[in-house]
Image (cartoon, rainbow, N blue to C red):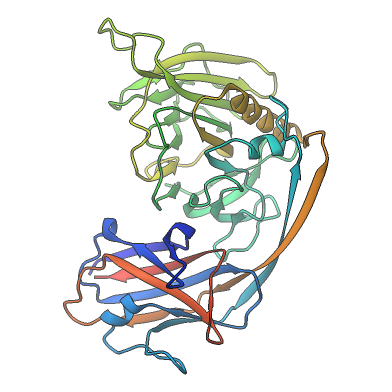
Length: 412
């Protein structure tokens, strides 16, 4: 018996507006001859409150041993009834400005203006949720799901394999997450995960462990970084070899701002007599003093590779605190300055807004959540599942959630 867990994200790119359903590709999952498909939980965000939502799927109905229930006017393809055990009213307030942020001011609006913004993880209570999708307003709250902040890529979702905790970085309002459990990591395994081209910039804050020890930080395929027990910081190159950041010795229980810029090569790193095509520019700043070091090291793997992105590694303990992350395509200097300034501002407990006329808009939505388990037993010798269609209705009317996750367990 083989078990496979899936988190089906409801993405706009998978939605067929004519058919009013999601068509989610599963070819990469290689699901063959499933014996059971189990709904473990469902959460969706919708514009209007609802006492129930019917979830339909022709693909699951076709492989079910017993035909699922139908409705008044539709043949049997109702595979799940979302009767919300909990509902949360969310009020999202957005502020726009006429001129936007100035270069290096680190305002929210300056970050919002970064094109191709891949990551903006800020661990805000509304975007760092626990195992039951509840917000985490307090330090010490457990966290399992870390969502991106808009307008960053809304397909990015980091899920932890253990209960992490919300922790404070510095003495002000910066939030991050860490873990006291063994073998803990966070991963975004839902594709696509890649940069659009060969250059990108990533800035993040970490708080180091209380003692010198090996602590993997981020592993975004092309960018893999670690704290080493000998007080050094390393970056992995495209062959898996380690490049040590020159002049950098990290100290325990300190907060650092780290910038990694994958840029066109300026040096011959491999000794072949030619300037490398790509390389990493690295800048590491100790936030309590402002002291910094810079270095240029060998490049990592091809950033256009499509694979899972990780925080830490499953075979290590998560002994540091991971703080906010900003990452984007390209090497625009003003965007890099704004990303670094924004992280410094949050660490210092300062909120910076652009000095221009502001327009505030509040949008309300409802998050519906259910952990009712539903088991669909499949016919023998069911075909390989290449895709799955999902649609939602209420009172016979199609409903398109703004976002959502369906947690499935596949038994084969």
